[in-house]
Structures are given as structure tokens and as C-alpha cells.
Image 1 (cartoon, rainbow, N blue to C red):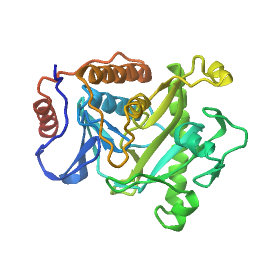
Image 2: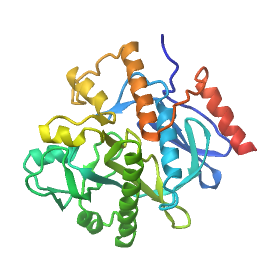
Image 3: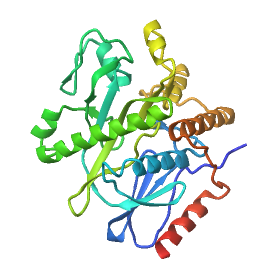
Image 4: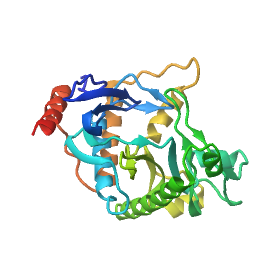
Length: 317
């Protein structure tokens, strides 16, 4: 049973000027500095896009990001104007900053790997001695990454280096840091209400034509963030057990166990319809846990047509 998924788009919206296709999202630029961002059902892991899409994944990511933007717009302005379709966000075109603001409340993932390798500094920020994987940092740390060109991996970079190279001005960087901490604090509070711990996440910012710094792209989604279940966190840490997490880590683990880590010459393992369905179910579970709301499946019998109609109606109204 091939479920209908949105793997790529080829729209021609009213007043369209250009289109950019990222790993998961496709961004259409229209007249009057308006962007139409379409979240596809593509799944990327280890910087590789998997051959099959995940039903409802685009809708899930778009709706979590939209909800989180609404829940944080009182503290940080964002680019979003409307969501005319479950898979689509419309907003103000911005000049994106060439850094991703990564913030970590706990020593997990990349930070833990670096720590295990004996490093005590990450992106110019020191990490205390005597920590073990998934321990909470005394204070959340900001560990920025440079935005890679398509096909390259993002790279760790320090604040000093960002300023020295002039990637971001000192004045703007201060705003990015302030916003990053405020968003992470709010995200942590929202997660706590749902019995979750926001472990780490990344934010992207841009500047509008009027020079306002705004939050862009996605926020607090399972693709951009790592969550733990709060229940049992302490016990698991004390016993040295792995934490139960909500992120797309389960996909990475499945790929690794099937001999794939995105390295030269490795083949992406075949994903059966059953496996694809199980990933879709996991994403729905993520949605419901993160938002505290029941997921409502949109009509996917003709995704392309539905999106075109909804977006066109939004602009023509």
C-alpha cells in the first residue's frame, strides 16, 4: 500500500519569482518579499534524503513549528504571516543569518560525543569536568554552527570566530543570543507542561527588509530539537541507562543498525511499507506529545492539488 506522500513540488504561485529546494522544505519567493514555505514528507538523516517519504511528516513539522511560533511571538518576533494549508507556511522574506544558533541544556548528542573524545570546550564554551552523558549543564550553553552550503555538513564555530570573520556583527549577535536564551527558556517551560525535557535545539534567524531580526524556519520540532521524557529521567541517569527520547534519533539508530551512516559508498537500506508506516506513527506520537493535542490527519488523496488551491485562494482572497 503506497501511502500518498509529498516528495517534491513544482508550483507556480501568483507573482512567483524563484524557488529554493532544501533537504526537507521548498521555499517559493513571490513579489512583495513574501515567502511560501512548503514542508514536504521527505526524511533526511546523516545529511542524506531517504528515497521514500513519510506520510504526514510535512504536516506534522509545519504544524508544530506554527504552534511554537504562536506560543513565543510575545517574546521573539518571527517571520510567519499565515498557514493557508497544513503543509504550508507563508511569511516575510528575510536575509538569513549564516549561523544556526544551537543551544544545549544537557550534554547529549554531538556535545556528548565531543566530551567522550576528551574535549572540554565546544564552540569556545567550556564544559565542566566530571559530567556524564545526558547530565544537565549548570547553565544552557550556546554552541553555534555555520550554515553549510547544500551537501556540506554544518560546522561548529565559536562566537569569537563568528565576530572575527564578520559573519554576524557584534550588535546583531547580542540580539541572537538574547533571543536564543529566551526561546529556549520558553520551550523548556512548554515542554515541562507536557512531561518533557527540551534537551537541545537550534534556531535560525533572519533580518527583514526593515532591518528587524526575526525567528525563521522551524522551531521546537523533532527534526530540530531533542526531547527526553521527564518521567524517570533522574532514575535513568543514576543507573547509567539511556534516556527515553523524542526526536528522529530512532531513524538514525535504525539506519546505523542497517549499516548506513551517510558515508562514502554506503547504500541507503530499503524501507518496507510497514517500516515507513511505523515511522509515520512515531511522528504522530511526537506531535501529540509535543503539542498536547490530538493529531488530525489532513486529506492526502491529492496533496499537490490541495496545496495549490489553498495557497492560491489565500493570495487571491
